Image (tube, rainbow, N blue to C red; front, side, top):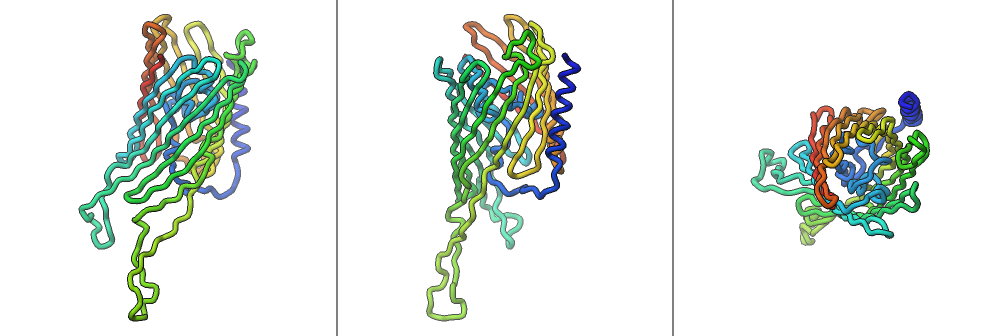
Length: 352
């Protein structure tokens, strides 16, 4: 079983590499609100962000809204990620399971750049002024198992960005599906077999900035006297696309016992602002009956990506059970981001 599983994984990776080996220009730096590419949840990040097919908790808001259909309890999730250059990324969300209807979830993600000093060509050491910049997105999601082996989900989101006195906003949707199969399933049970997941994220309108910082005085006839000098003019900016991402992936459990489980996952990504890539991850879970679970995770992000700054990831977590079927989950992840060094990510979740 393990040998055939590894053979399948290698075949999928090699197939992805052959499909992605294309000589074409990449649209790096041509999209706005790129905080939408920042993954939600330490478990997914620790597994190299190979999560589109196996996500079954509230982080489905980001990876694949179809995963909400697998939730059995209400959940709340909070994330904090100190990013490079003193940038902070945060997330807070809640999901409510409605029997016979599905799961409804609400999430808020944000990126805060902090206060930045204003400089000009004449005052390159600073003018004494400061300004703020930041982005946020509010998502409303729904997921449901249509049948026992097929789940569908969708999200609607409002995206906002501001830089000093300028603002921009856009609307987008996410769609996703997860399919449980009999392949590699112990005892033929679909819920433990190979899973296939697909999602498309951030399909929506363009982000176009507007505000008083675009106003500039102009003299339309500088060589004439007696005309209106320094009329109020305004720069007209173009709209910027959101970072559209298509994900497809598989996951399976080559080892599954009463107390131990190993999960292997592979995702292939096709973004609109970079080259295609492959993410890979593995998770080991040990269940302590009546107490909870502990997790060890590792992965690699950005395989086959052209000039990638991504690399190894790893992390750990624990799910602690309480009375009345309540639990608290604490997870940590470390991500290598090349020349920027490494970053840490922390999440805390509650099931109630």
